[in-house]
Image 1 (cartoon, rainbow, N blue to C red):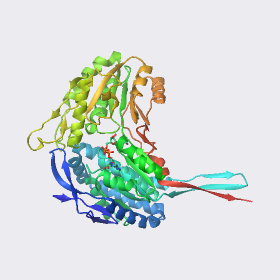
Image 2 (cartoon, rainbow, N blue to C red):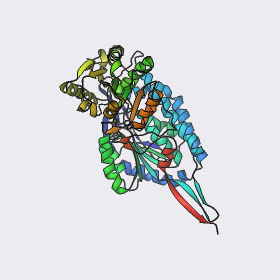
Image 3 (tube, rainbow, N blue to C red):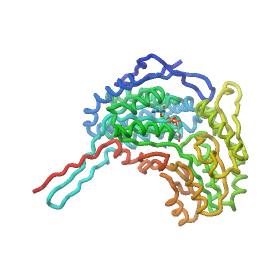
Image 4 (cartoon, rainbow, N blue to C red):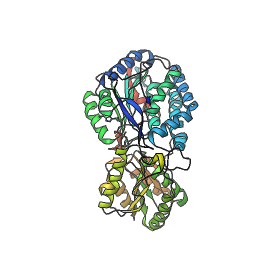
Length: 481
Ligand code: NAD
């Protein structure tokens, strides 16, 4: 069985303790490889390498840094099949999805930021003829990047690429639940000739490796994507140390459907926004509000389509819904389905673990589940479930649906379906969320600000916002007379 290694100072190395953790294949429920159980000693090694590389890397011309990133992008594209297979095996997601979305996006992240840095300019402020101010944007230092398991390589590279392009060196930790493609990325970086120490990848548990990165006294900025509870814990350590913090956290996104929407487009997109990646996308719309006049029709059609979704082995071409990522996560999602019933919800379809045949019998599969009859303010409708589970609720007025949509602690993304132009704008302005999709879902232009409000996070990723985060502005004032 394969032993994954850390990537420190340009080399693949074992954890100092020589201890390893089991890595599961969620489609079969068995251990298929081992992950370094690293600790603060490995983080210290990674930090030292990153720190030693910082001066040279941050002073390397942008176009040279850019070329390294573009080379990495090219190698990701070249290894698309291998990376997609690894992602699907590690995460349980359909191979088709990994091939179509996850891996191409990882390459795109490097391409986007590798070219973006060439266009990143600072400001100057002239005080007529008395003085001129200009702003230097300098790489902050060694960046700590910590990412989750739901879109493993996609989100890992979404942090690493802008950090490296901006001139930071990096100590990064992928999720211990899905480490494989981060490991393959370290091989790609070696092949691309990335100078040693520029990127360091330390595998292991959040409480050990993640915590050691967050509390390291010489790592001045942390870019984190993951759960809100973890984000809160990270902020409590990093804020008193005055670290720069970017927190991309959980969500409980509303999908608001008005009766005047383009029905067919809405219906098919809503299937995706509910169940793509087994509902394990922070941007999925898990609370579906439907205008009362359309409610019964929507319910019947949506449930009929949901029942047709093939739940199956990730490598099977027919599969639309693969395995959820782990046994504890499966149990958490199933416990929410139980809670929903206790709270008075009616299961319209799904609601159970799905047992596949043969070698997949122990895999972590859940039937796509639609629930109705719950009040907007019950726990099922307020807490993040992060699985193939949605609730549907009728509404009568714009004011009512806005107050229900905005009633949660989260504010990441939202979707509105209507052909009524001014209503669409009104809704967009009044929804508490960092992202509003009108008549679409998950359309991503990487130049746009990405992030949430309230308990969904602090700060924005995307476009030049990411470069602003990984650089520090320094104003230089020159007196002219
Ligand atoms: P998680 O918070 O459990 O873990 C995320 C990462 O943090 C992992 O690498 C983990 O090892 C590490 N970690 C855990 N404890 C830590 C600690 N004490 N200190 C430092 N690091 C620690 O989240 P998860 O279960 O991997 O991911 C699912 C969550 O991520 C969901 O809540 C989802 O909404 C959220 N998410 C948000 C976005 C976004 O862009 N806002 C994107 C994807 C996922």
